[in-house]
Amino acid sequence: MKSIVVFCLFLLILSGCSQHNENISIQDKKIYEFSWCSYKDGFKAQDLNNELISYLGFLKNLKDQHGLYKETKYLDPSFKQKKYDFSWLDIFENELEKKAFYEFAENSEIHKNWLSSKDEIIICDTQKQTFYETKITNNYDFLDGDQTYVGFCQLKDGFDLDYLISEIRRNSTFMDKPYNQVVLTPDFNMIDFNFLIYLETNFVMNDLNLIKKNGLDNACEEYENYSANSLLFNTYTID
Image 1 (cartoon, rainbow, N blue to C red):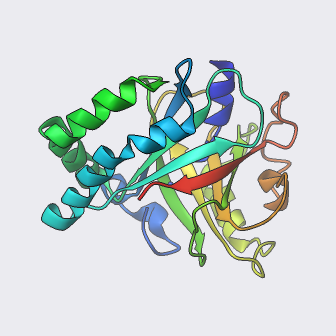
Image 2 (spheres, rainbow, N blue to C red; image 1 turned 90 degrees about the horizontal axis):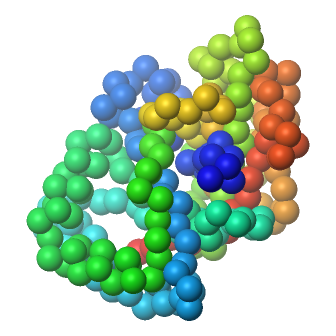
């Protein structure tokens, strides 16, 4: 489970549209919900892909009939992991839409059929990890197969999260490159980190030290197993 904890040092994982949305009610913030999953013996990604028709039908019905839209992403780690094969990421616009999604799912035969077929192929940690978004920069249309970087930070004594968010906003490192960047704060009891920097981009790189690039080296503890305090994923949009 230690590897899972590190990844959610993401991961990842984030709402408002303005640069001052940290002042928006938490009920209106975008929600990122991560599940850590592994394939059962004898199964692989293609098997899960073949069963997605039920899930996609459920999502289409929610959008067409109820105006409810939810993003789902498959995060494939570019680093070796022993505890999980991938992360399943659900993104909700706010608390109300998250609640509505689960209410519809609980009463949908289509969704129940999807869960039944899914459970034959993969096993997921039942303890999902939820984060709220603070938008930093958003000027890039994310494409299927692009990369997701996650930088994680445990604050050193004397540093304040709100101050660091303002420092991140003033950083011009990525201004000439396309990316979406947000800060994620956890909605669960986690003592290993205080926030994540979640960045989507078409950068073709094997590593990106988001903590260093954002000038946060002095504010964040260095995690011994990941000296750059960052993780990288190849990301696929499920739609």
